[in-house]
Image (cartoon, rainbow over all chains, first blue to last red; front, side, top):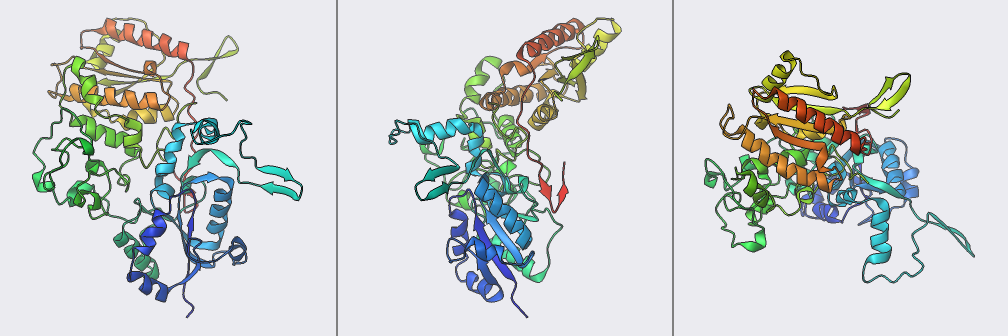
Length: 320
Length: 158
């Protein structure tokens, strides 16, 4: 029997998701035994024409990481959707927009002006901007078009499953690959991770007080962090109460608070609003006069609560 | 077509749409009183009764904006008067934090308002509703960018 064909592809991402595949370590050998990798730009030499030459649905599954910001990424997402039986949004950026999704706090012109003009290391007196087409003596050279906003993968093409995380935890990747190989998949549209909040798995949950009450949120550099006690009880902004479990509490074990990369559980529509609600609820402030000072200890609410999910949020993009 | 357009004398004009979340025990009762007292006020609010202002999930406010509201008004019991002891304090904390997030997203302070209105203050419902309607009218329609429709396995989901 021919081995199922598998592809990996990247769009607007940092490469960390590719690293997660490498982190499979010796397990990756088992995966390679069971499947044929037919596309993996970061590690192997395949061209777009190789993908175009495939029959529709020929690839059993394609894992796509990264958000969608350019016309090239959109074209590849559409092409891979056609060629793959199952399309899996791999990692926070493909799932909910991720860090690149924070670009939706700015409009396209602001971003281009920053990158091509006002960054101190840039010298660009003609104020040149990247053009989709440029005539040169040899002919016309082209660049992908930079879209108005960042989109999640499922805002551009139909997605079958989601592997959350920044990057997805090894255990979740292994479980997903095994489930695909054995044909034991949940209903389409599912996030391939537990559907509980991280606090239920937290190794520090016994030290969480009955009632949390915080007068000022502190940032990790401001205090000596106790390695045993609940991070919220220490005044750190830990998003465990609002974030999906499945990471093995990796950050907590590294003595750092959860920043919410696995996104919301299935009952939540807007991760940032829910996380904001959870944090505001445990603040200890009643007087209208003092409340703003307490609330101000969260320096950047949009960046904190939508760190990985602005394009997937109800507001989607800053009003220009 | 621009949202919120209504026909007046054959001309299409824009009217502000305001979603009002009123708590069952104080502000909703106050708006009942305003009604039975035959007070007139701007018809631009759509009132949604919640048991407590503390029940108000910030998702409701964002969803209201996403579904076409130009402003959101929240009414709860005065500090110390909450039927559930402290729900209104919780609402206030969420409101203050959410307002900062909304500013970052380009939604001005005038589009969200939190007011303490007790069950006997029907006249305050009238005043606040009128003020908010005029304020949002001056600000104009909220112009949120449209979200590309998410699709799962070929089926568009809400």
